[in-house]
Amino acid sequence: MKKSIIDFRKMAAENKKIVYLTAYDYLTAKYQEKAGVDMILVGDSLGMVQLGYETTYPVTMEDMLSHCKAVRRGAPETFIVGDMPYMSYQISDQQAVENAGRLTKEALCDCVKLEGAGLEIAGRVRAISNVGILVMGHIGLTPQFAAELGGYKAQGRSADAAVKLIRQAKELEEAGACSILVEGVPAAVGEAITRQAGIPILGIGAGSHTHGQLLIYADMVGLYDNFTPKFVKQFAHVGQQLQEAFQEYCREVRSGSFPDDSVHTYKMSADEVEKLQRITEA
Image 1 (cartoon, rainbow, N blue to C red):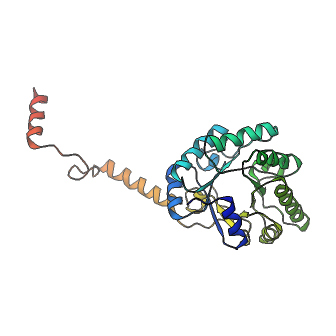
Image 2: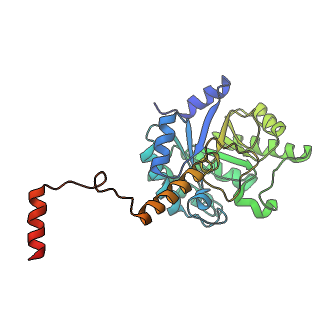
């Protein structure tokens, strides 16, 4: 049975960890649901791990809608969070509400996520939540603000920077965020944010004290090898297995050992084979 935000609040209160992973397609979502994942994020990280971009900036609302729909079909009984891509909410409250509405109405997402903090972003969170759509905040290392941050760098590494993040989390909570993703901060900072929050705090590279953990699935199964963040643990080496399988396929096709007609082809009666030969010879 699909968990709700009420279930996640209860899990946080009872110190039961929330399992959170990204997915971008039907098959991955299907296997994650079978595995018992609590929550799936269709992240704009799909731009890098699915579409081959160098950043998340080029990802469009149409990209997000297409992938969110596929994930929903694969995981109908899992809580789905849809990322709001770059420039889908920054312009105005109206734009933010309209695009959040598309993710929930057209793609059937249970929640939307947007990056950043400050008065304007808090205003967007408030506007979206005011129309009844659940909103997850995202602070710390926020890829859509990488230029402002000076690149993909850990955040909150000084006491003053950590206090700023704690304040940002409180502002988002007060604006109506149902939960917050904290990315790329020291464990002590993740713990401090979690301790002071009244909503579930999910972490990705934020230490072990958050209410739950997120990883990009392509990182944790060894599928995306362009780079591996410090906080990633690889639970499998799927990329290597795929490469080996493709190499073996190449070898067998080129050598003629695949397909084996006694195993991999459909049967035809001897009479029909003989008839076919007569027709083709004629």
